[in-house]
Every structure is written in structure tokens, then in C-alpha cells.
Image (cartoon, helix red, strand yellow):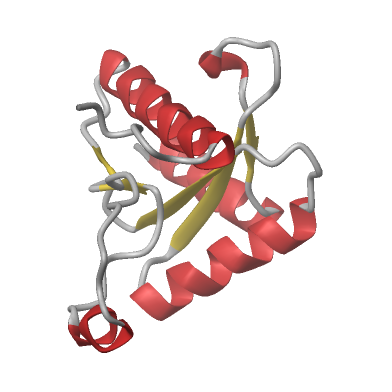
Length: 129
């Protein structure tokens, strides 16, 4: 049984895109951990709330970064970037970005959204290295 069995197409597409992003980053020498897929379980709401909160973001294990992936056809760029920035702040991380799937394109041609201040931080770190 695969991790996507039983998932609606929209969740399957999101799961598969997260996996591709992780594989692409690994191919570039960037170790990471991808958020696991949805678990199809019959749990009571009280059991769900009793579980420890999972780290936010879809691409994990990159220090100081919260990275979300999106596959939505309707693109709310501002909303997605604001949500990632908020999640990063809550998690105590200094940088956030959103990787958005481009339909009909290879994963390496995905859009990457980040605010100008985050880009400036990244460029400054690269310049100072």
C-alpha cells in the first residue's frame, strides 16, 4: 500500500509534489525531511487534540527555515507568504518561503516566493560567506 492510497486527488498531488521537492533538494546536496502524508485513521477528535503538535512547514530540517509547498491552481501569493511567515514566527524560525508547483513544468522550475527582506538576508549571508 502506498502513502497516497485513499487520498483525494488534491491531497495526492500535494503529497507527490512535496516528495519531488525533497528529492530535488537532496539531489542538490541539501538534506531535508518532508512532512509525511495524511494518515487515514479513524480517530476521535479528543485523540487528535491530545497528540503533540507537529512542526509546521512541508520541508523540514533546514536550520532557521520554514518552507511550505503549494499546488493550488488559484494562487493567493500574498496569503500563502503571510501564512508561511506567521508559521515561521510561531515556530521561532527566522526565514520562510513558499515553493509553488508550476503546472506542466518540472519540479526544478517551481516558483519560490519569499519576501524582499528574506531575499536580502540570504544575499547578505552569501556575500559575507
